[in-house]
Image (cartoon, rainbow, N blue to C red; front, top):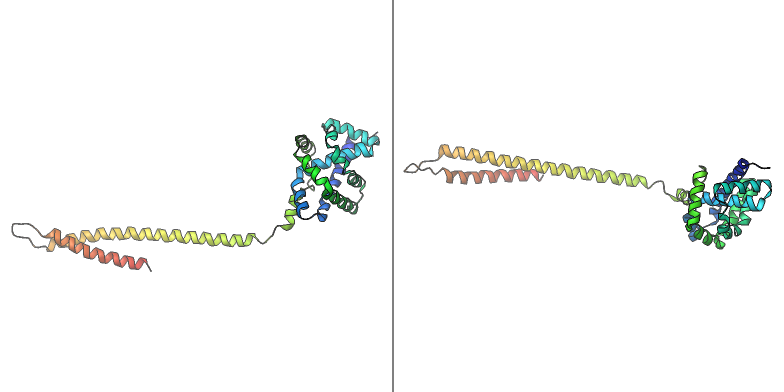
Length: 256
């Protein structure tokens, strides 16, 4: 009599072979069929479906002592009741499931993968799309991935296809462009800082020139009869002339 542990080993190893054969089926899919497969076979979906397929084929098709133990394990996992709901899916995939269970080599799994691709484009894709959206499957998927996490070698379809087509040279141009943008931004920042400092220097120079002009004018300005000085007029005129010349000089230097 097969033990529960033996049944678990048989289910998991069969599920791994099934996942591998589905990966091989990618070689026979293209266009819309490949896009549909990528949307269905995420890692979580793929592993849950393979565990269900493996439990079904061992518990109902293989039968015998290992089948009885597998059914007992599926009951313990809370998965056995799903078979009535998923019977249409299993019925349409029996040929492939048996090939995977009996496979002894990668060559056998590649043959099973070709069979799966044929079934997939022949109507299995439509059934799978309905199944993965059903709340019953979502509940089963959570249980399966919690109790039996997918092995490292089991990857979703999308991840595998993306890894093949993703260009490896795109990051370099993006890096160079980023560097150029950074240098441009730094240059603009430095220019703005220089302009601000030049403005501050210009304002300070204006003030100093005004003070100097007023002082000079005060010492030289004649006094009108009656004691009043013509200092304000002279200071204003002189200050305007000198400051204007200084500002023009600073502006011409800043523009170089």
